[in-house]
Image (cartoon, rainbow, N blue to C red; front, side, top):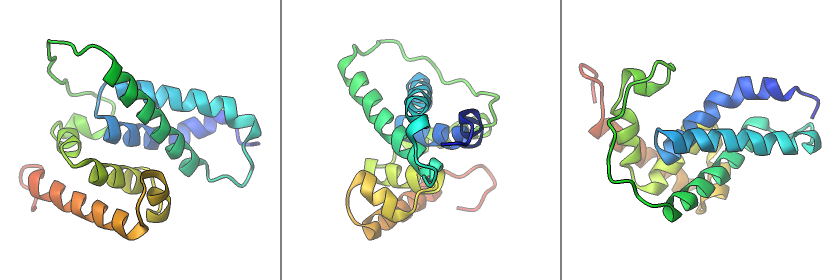
Length: 161
């Protein structure tokens, strides 16, 4: 790949962060998955073919890293204290809409993954179906159902549902 790796991080970093946060929820696990995604990408970068869709490739790497984090979390002890979430100033949705990620996290897994990979990751329904299984039509339906559920359960004050 002749494109500088740093440019790929700058251009696709926010997309990868949105995807891993949608899959894992906000917090250190998503941040770890983001970091692991780009570490893995950096190792593979010199051998990546020029015609590769970098965004789709990074979303796939992020998907696998999110699975790794999920498996790792399942093996760790569960802490007993729950810290309150703090709004951030990163420009991501939780700063202005702290309940949005919670609403996304409350969706059934298939709807959440379909929304994350299609709407936040920019993958086509066929590519999302390859990642999570099923047909493109079932992925399209899951994404539509998830979006409808979000509109029904979450809407900023004053917005129409």
